[in-house]
Each structure stands twice: as structure tokens, then as C-alpha cells.
Length: 186
Image (cartoon, rainbow, N blue to C red):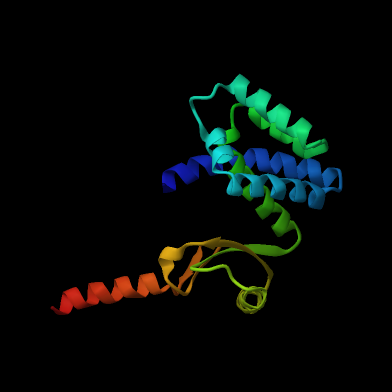
């Protein structure tokens, strides 16, 4: 999985960087980010769309036609529409989520923010999000944007990833550690 993520990052980085440069030149980084957030939401909410993007069985021409139709139906214009069309034309739709993540990281860095991935057993309340963001800001010294994921297997607690640091306070990890410790004793 790590090797796959590395390959996706290598593909996504130049696309995201080029889009960011264009958005900054057009003074529309926030608008492009908002458009990409809409795409990201669609990808996360629709397993069929996510599978479509990754499918090696569907030809590049078919994907281009479907993306063109989606963009027309959504009345998407400007940099986001042109970007997605280019990605489809180049046969790189499978890397679109990674491109969006890379763009968001560049935009956050430009604003002096840092992204933190937070995985919890249940969605965090607004109060918990604010508290966690404040604690991370105090520790890191920068504004923190939280990207939330839910994984019921954690049982409770959180896993927070900020850059290369990871804080795992999930019950699943603690129970696994206890299980290993008990095996060593017994």
C-alpha cells in the first residue's frame, strides 16, 4: 500500500503543483479548492464514481466522455473543469483523489496552515474538532485544518497524523498491545 501511495504521490504532485500555480496566478486558490472539495465529496460519497475513476477496464475515451458530460451537467467552468478534463485526457483519473489532496496541502501551506488527518471511531462533534485543532496548534505552532475519517474498528480514541508524526490513542491499538504483552507473560 505504501508503494502504491508513493507512486500516486509521484503522479499527483506535478499536476497539483501546476494547478496551484495557475490558481494563484488567477488569484482564485480558494475557488479552485472549493471546486476540488466538491469533487472530493462526490468521490467519497459515491463508491461507483470512485470505482469508475480507478477502473482499468473502462477505456480512456469513455472516461473522457463521461467526465465531459458530468462537467457539463454540473456547469463546471474555469480551472477545475479544465484540470479534470486534462487529467481525464491524460488517463490519470485514478490519481485524482491524490491530486486533490496534494493541491489542498499546497493551499494550506500557502495560508500558513498544516493538515492533520484524524481518524476516530465516530464523527467528532464541532466542540471536539475545535478542541483538537487548538491543542494541535499549541503543539505545532501553526493553524491546523482537520481532515476527518471514521473507522468503527478503532472502538474509541483517535489516530492523528500530522506530517510524518502519528499519535495513536485508539482503544484498538491499546488492546492489541495488551494482548501482545499478555502473550509474553504467559
